[in-house]
Image (cartoon, rainbow, N blue to C red; front, side, top):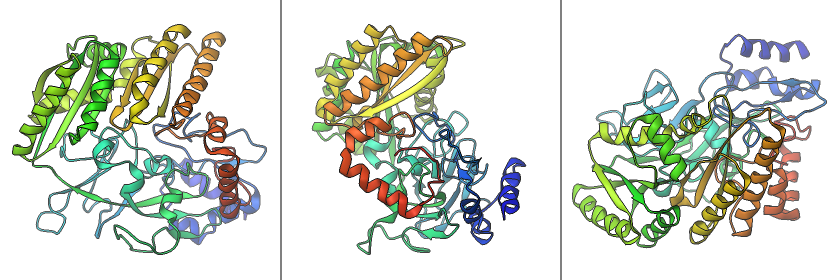
Length: 461
């Protein structure tokens, strides 16, 4: 029994693919349950402490059973499964790219002109400019589903949660679950409990996600992007609030504070001014874009800003967004040889200006290097803290800052994490956010599905 379980670990170590059917057929996870081996899922691009890349210290033996994708299977990109009614496995309509999957409806099919939502656009990916969740580097489908993640396009197309229609999950006892039923891809359902939403955001604590069925969004006729400068972060965030209140249908609206704008400019060689900036993108028809551009420019000017230029050519737009996607590496370049630590919160849009400014003051008062970047259209922003890991004093200041940031978001009616997840580092904040009754309900769900607490032990709860 135990030998079979360790045999699965050996297959993973050798880089050989192990599918969910094999795991279920061999009773893989069931075997490990009987031998007391915990299952620590490894997340691509995860921060480890807030995400689920590393396991908590545990007295039981640990078998690391997942690779690319927080809940993907064993060192292989999680399968891009059924997209609506089209099967998009590798070698058919799914195309593997360095940091994700692209799927475009095949010509002549009912899905022609559609684009799957969750492919990151990277410098290596020069495919369709169509709408995606557009996450950061190394993200994968099931990894994003596991943390309920999103990206720059979420302000218009939503996060992972509303865009996942079905999941294939290997449960801790080795059984195979289709959360909406095998082969189901209805856009809505009132049949029974919403199991799909239960597993989206579960961070590897309830089962292995091995396949996702996703919504499709039509490719826009036209796309235009712009970089806008502002006298201050307050002006940039204030403009964001008004753009949303005026119902300008932005597809992306990203904040870079002065430090981050300078870092991205130097790293990506864009020659951008070192001031607070918003990166905007609009999707629509040629006619509607002209009106949207005029509205956006008026609101930018109202807050003392200016639009540097509008970019419609794909090459120009990709160059601009490549700089945004390189924010992590640009931040690390501020202090070569230091470690990076990213944390995020999300607050109601009306409270965003105050929370962002308080956070900037806190960074200055703490003497920390922490450029800010955010999906401010959702009220979500990130601080990338760059510090010396071998300096106990600086490491403690980073920890204290993240605690204050989380509680500042909670005091504003927000959440301690909009994308990164709870993991180990935000368990105390989760208790404060959800309360004793909410946490007790989550524990009962965990006990029902994973009674031995083998899946990502110590995470979240």
